[in-house]
Image (cartoon, rainbow, N blue to C red; front, top):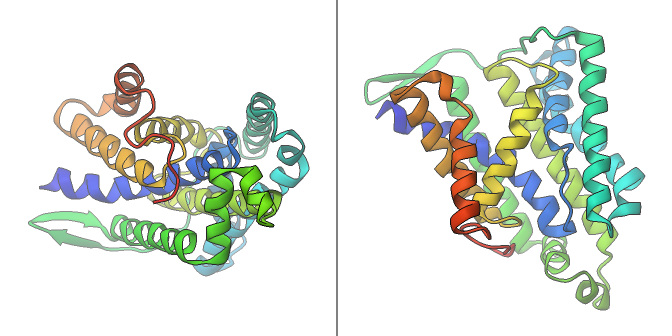
Length: 282
């Protein structure tokens, strides 16, 4: 029971981490390899807000706003000019990712940093005790995923996102500016990455390289679920999350990180299009 509850809570965070990654691919058709670095940026934005004594609300705001603005600037400054060349976008975002990590390493070194604790205390389920932070992570992650679902399916901008994800040319014919939709998508993905970084940093610690594992995790989840599919990302996150928690609790903690790679290899061999293919409109 403890493993199931823990896996359910952590998998919700994994889904949040992966959705921003798949959102950009589903709409723009490009892979953002700076996604992990954006998560790191979210964690350190909250860290610096804490160091300045600005309090928890300011730390939360910084962890959302700064990565969102960065992602929007990255799209406008670089990706927009290269969006018809997916390989160049991959290379460019990878270079940006390395620059961000190296900059953080220069300023902060290789020592992990502790973020302000978002919430203290513990709660119990079926005799097992968990940190309140994990409960907040679970609730907030699902709240955000639910709001994204409503935004995409029931707002004019959301329907524009759906239209561009299906066909850029078709969307242009009905007056939808794909560049505006792509910008909104990058900003949303940046905000999601920032929130994920805040939770990861508060739950564990923040380090310059923390985004590398999250980028691999995101890639594994979206490939398992189907690249471009929000529903697939949620299912993939829970599949990998449960396997990882079961592996580390029942076999060895040293195997953490192995489950995503093992599942990724199996899916690529058996069902390379992922569980839900490349659909976007759920």
